[in-house]
Length: 363
Ligand code: FES
Image 1 (cartoon, protein in one colour):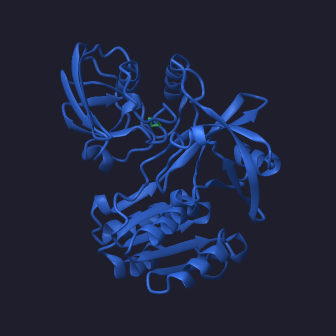
Image 2 (cartoon, helix red, strand yellow):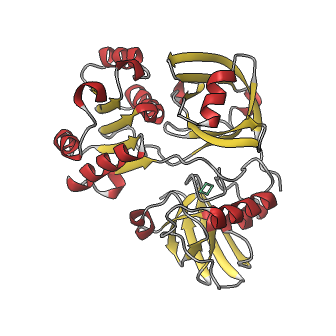
């Protein structure tokens, strides 16, 4: 079964800073629906590679959905093959293969006060959320934006313009490591303490996200008002076919040397399993999942348009909430213990652990 990717043309490349480029894609009318997105989502792109054929990477859309624009922003990282290739090579008129927008780092409502934390290129999904909330929502937006120095602040003038346009609703606090050092958990806690009834979104380097998340936890932000976006380099190839990807994911799981403590062993429960699924207002019911393949593959075979991106337990695009029954995941690099305890699971990695399963994608 082929995974549907699409080739889009680059219409503009904007040098945001010395090491960050925004890439704007043309989405033709026939793909507009396929590429419709929500603020905070990402695209999975296939970066050509001489060594491996391609490198699959997820990049957040920095544009806002209501703008009609599809723009990602990519910052070079030291030894980062894909980000450097994009910044060095992509020009207007070039094409790039990609999967449609995906991801769950998205506000459920724009009519709540938002506390946004961006660190470096972690601003990309965050500015999409800010732009959207300011235009389509009615509440306050506070952004804490940490960068190495003034030259590395992406979207500096745009943030200033948004702040001028919404002086009573939008506040940006810039934090420069060159001036203030890295923000400590104590400093972040002191800042966030003013906004404890806001809904928080956090994206940035891992130590920064941990410091922010620790602060939010210390302040008692409940899980449903605390969101973070983690990106890892996809080890598999989501542009191959399903069978190839299953093999790739299995290889990855065996070869990885990361902390696998949250991973679970594949289940011994065999079919037939009853599966009920709630997705985009539709209800599906099946009674013949044999437990011989991950749930995502089973749902695809049944014609369910289930979301996914990496197929390797690395991106959370396929995350669902288990309402009844249980699954075990073959591999998980993205969900935390807290997510697991709430019943969130990765459908691409899920094998049955009960004879009946009920899940929703609307959790
Ligand atoms: Fe990426 Fe399942 S599709 S974790």
